[in-house]
Image (cartoon, rainbow, N blue to C red; front, top):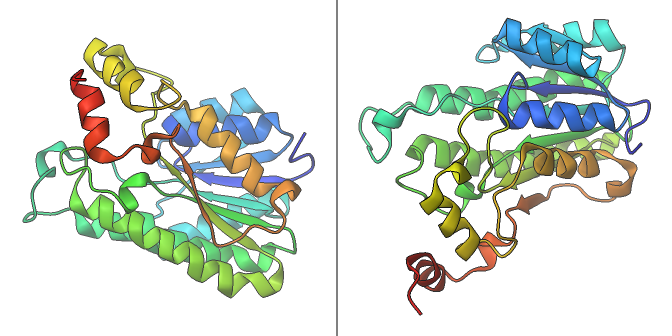
Length: 258
């Protein structure tokens, strides 16, 4: 039980990667508070894992403070904060430079992480941990997969991770990030359900599969545990080895050419 006796606040945890992280933290002994704007889904997951749900709008400083104060009221302290909340993908803006959705990305991915850290700092003691959920698109461009504000905000989140690690390190609080690549949904249509996508994944990902939400959760649990007590300011890539492939060679593998 890596996290026995620990408490955790996970944002954007009503579904997807956030839900997977919440489940893994709870299975490792942590008491988890799910923070989301989706009240019904958050409450259902909280019941499933024996945790708590808090509804909060993290696009405002007041909402972030509310999330922290409610979590502290429910579980008494904060050992772990996972900043996972991100805007829904707006496919109509993918590949476009004009008409961007920068405001929501800058606020929910970057500013909210800073607001939450500031609000939580008085409740976090030595050994506490903040884990930001970044993306491999923070450093590599997938121009047909997500908007430029998503790329830029995730890149900024990596730098914010390093800044907060320096800022909070003297108080014994560690700050790291996890950068996933291809992740299959736990609910609904998976990326690998498409036969052609599945073939490309098998050809280009050294481990031959997309990640699951639990894979990301396991990385978060490790970074939040005493096993990572001397790790801070780092971005841990969880991509099944995809990033080790040289791009042109990966394209050849994906095309099926020899």
